[in-house]
Length: 190
Image (cartoon, rainbow, N blue to C red):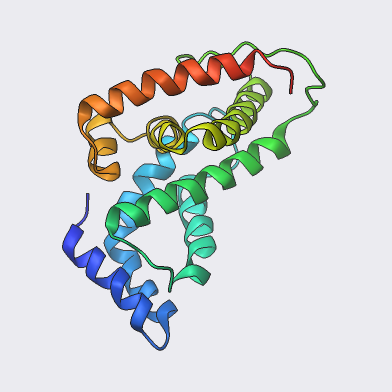
């Protein structure tokens, strides 16, 4: 990951700047490669044949974040967590636009280890997991954040531990709990 201290310093400068969007724009070259890595992980779930590409996802998420340049950014980890969430929202919106049918009260089997082969099934799974993750967030935000980092942002367990400032064991435990909760929630009709 990029130079953490420089990124954190610049994020803090955004809060105090007269024109935070200018400072935020100067941050882009420092975080661009990391954002592309996150975008690649997000998009891996939509391939093959998806029309949203890595560069477009990075640019759209950056455009979504720029108006919030003066947000009270805690540090680099906070920035990347918010960026991953913005990307997740964009990918889910894109997946919704790809869906050719709506699930109406039918039970959906949730397989968190396997990405479906058919494009509409992939899009449906992404939308379904997003809905379940929103429910999980109301139950346990820590589990939802951990799942989001590992599943949607594609961070490793070690990167997630660093990002969330918890131990590796805590990440592993939260992942197992989040998966169990999501599977349980998926048995409820939406």
